[in-house]
Image (cartoon, rainbow, N blue to C red; front, side, top):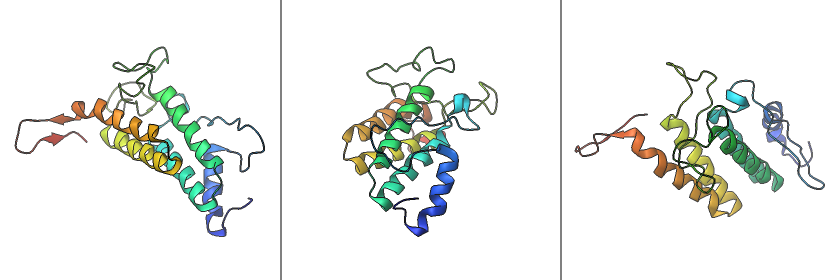
Length: 172
């Protein structure tokens, strides 16, 4: 593991087991996140959120910019899969190619419905927004923060109830 601080080696090993990414890049980075063991079509929002945050951490610790590229590729992959219907035939309702997060993101559960079914959970989505914001800060690219804001605007109304009450509520 080239240029990885000693205290980060176990961290990198764990990330490698999940994401199988290149440690160095000579030319064009041709990496696609491998399917996760769990998650619909190999993507699960909670795990991939920490994947993005961990790639940012690797960049901060090693100063190797390709880790930010890996984070960006993972973000794009998540949006392409979890921002679509389960059969991938269409964006989620309310979204478009110009506004891919306007329909939210599925969390990627294996089951389509039921008590443990795929859907949108506020805590997963807000953590994803945090990861997008952190990637924006790390890369200096405001587009990631804009995506987080777009996602917040899209999903917030569905999770807030008793809006007119003194103490509105949020479905977590």
